[in-house]
Length: 151
Image (cartoon, rainbow, N blue to C red; front, top):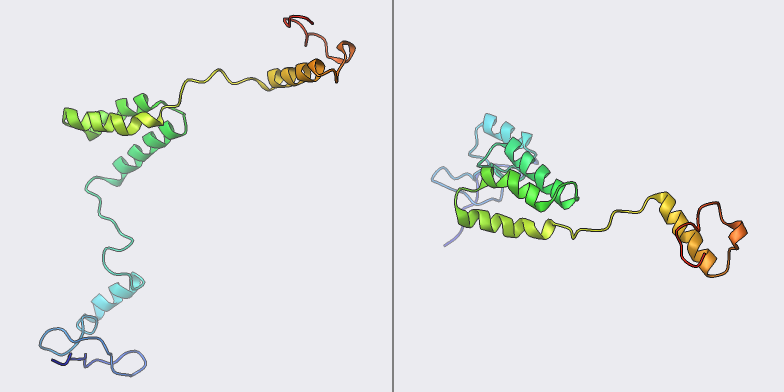
């Protein structure tokens, strides 16, 4: 069976070439009213639904959820802190809370030692140079060797 071709013309005046749908012999695009065509072109030709997501919840809630998760990933807050915020809003059943906790748990970083201050990093560098014999006691700033055994 031969495919029926749209009886409309394209913007160059040539036959449309799209398959006709329905009994009127035109394609889906030529079936649109001028207002519908204008709306279609305003979307830049994107098909309905592409680049546009209908969320089942308000966007502000999604934005808040993302910000809580980002704060946990970045280390600003712990995963348990994120769980405490998210669980009441996102879960209703115990198995949902367990699953949320399971998903967030890997975000917790192991407890690290207190980061060294820049001054302490410099002090440790000087001590290494001293231990390697590259700096003499007299060349060290005052107090660098305090608290170091064998200094």
